[in-house]
Length: 158
Image (cartoon, rainbow, N blue to C red; front, side, top):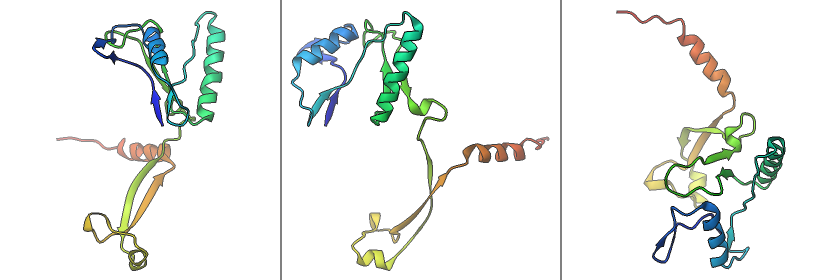
């Protein structure tokens, strides 16, 4: 499925200096969207006055987006052009401590299994490995602390 976010050029007309709200309206009028193949990205207006209401709305919308497994938000002033100075902000759950689902994986080993070869598993690039062992770091803060605590007493001299 294709998701459309913006239109920057239409025919011979460059639209990068037009307001985001105008580009978005144009995009919604010019395309016929089919929920099975193409959709217009979701958008909502966030009025900043009163600030408490804006914060509450943003929290509710963000929670709903995360529940729907969306990546996050691009927050843009409605009158901002695509080019030039703009104050856009990307908000992703990975940017909020405790909310992200980023994992640290690392290839820690590889081997060969004759049984897997018989089952039709083909080794990549004619390598002799067809079994890969992946590790996941689940205690990153502890590891960082241990590494830094062992390094801190070192004195480097001439």
